[in-house]
Length: 473
Ligand code: NAD
Image (cartoon, rainbow, N blue to C red):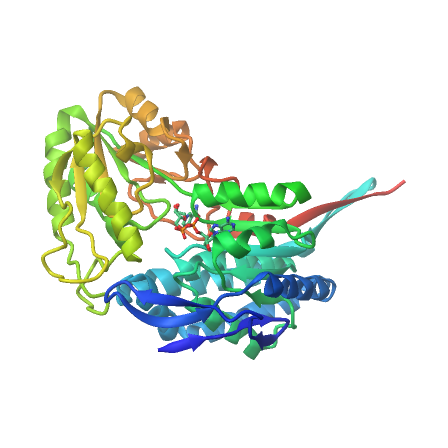
């Protein structure tokens, strides 16, 4: 078992003043697989001071210099991709073959994309009256969740580096290992001391210290809406920029004329990937009443195709939930759905037949779900799909929008023009039409209580940019 007993601050590995360790548990075995030292207020203060001191040097580097460094980091990530994948699988249970493809390779590719986006910082608007410059925001606190721990980290550190910001990073308690690998990579490629600082720790403990720190200019947070509200509250007295990427309860509308075999398969697979622990999962499938029973039959058969089991088995499509805590949360929601009167089509409360221990949940589908039920309104964050009947497209759009969240959505129709018209009526930051997938070149973020930021692509860089206007007399 590896013990990570230091924080990475100002280019050095530093032991926290108070020695307190956190057990990292492999959710497939429920065994402790690593330990990390927990950072304290003292290490947060040191890290912020280092990031503040490094800012003037780093923000004044050329886009070319930052771009070369981003390529060098991406090369090292590529050479350590197997180690990154193994760390993610061990700590949050994603099957190893999926960790390689969707958790790590996508993250490396999108990290590299910011080598190009860095040059946007040097583009200026100019006329006889004024020049408009882009400048780096400053010292950023970057807090990430456990469900796609490398991607969520990259979605913050890549644009922050490209813009010329310096940073203090805090991973989720359960999944810090890839952050340590990234710190080692930054050390190896010679990133100037203080640009990237890593302070692992408990969110409710050091999070408020980080988010309220007077020398921090911006907080970018990805996680639950519950914690996002606390982050905003901590940051608001010092008027920081706060970028929130929060939860979702996204709707997929299948129209009456759609290819049901393809549409329902797409929707079920979307919810089950990563054991349902995906913020933009399409967890409410809206189906015309006239074809409801047909859709249920397809959904049941697609869900039951899943092989649940050890994340090290290459034939498995679903590993465990990320922790026993998350498993219990999901099981409580499944019980709630049964109590609310929804019909269990497949799945349920028992351990999957294939396993005897670990944080596993069966792929679960509920029919006869009313959108007012809690299982249709609250984010379950597990492999649970709610199938909701509708009558007419206006009713479908009304149900899709009847949510506190607005992260993503989907429309599947026979005709793409008709699908686009429906897509425009849904209040969400992204909409996947005709079976499209998440794309790291596309701006991503929420409406309503799903957040207020946009990550990925060029728009993701702009989160880290201040606009300066110089007016000429
Ligand atoms: P969480 O809110 O419990 O934790 C997220 C991070 O916040 C962790 O690092 C945690 O330590 C930290 N944290 C907790 N309390 C804090 C506080 N008071 N101040 C500062 N930091 C604090 O979320 P989670 O369970 O790790 O992740 C799941 C949630 O993340 C889901 O709601 C999911 O939808 C959301 N998510 C959103 C996106 C997106 O891009 N919108 C992406 C992935 C996950």
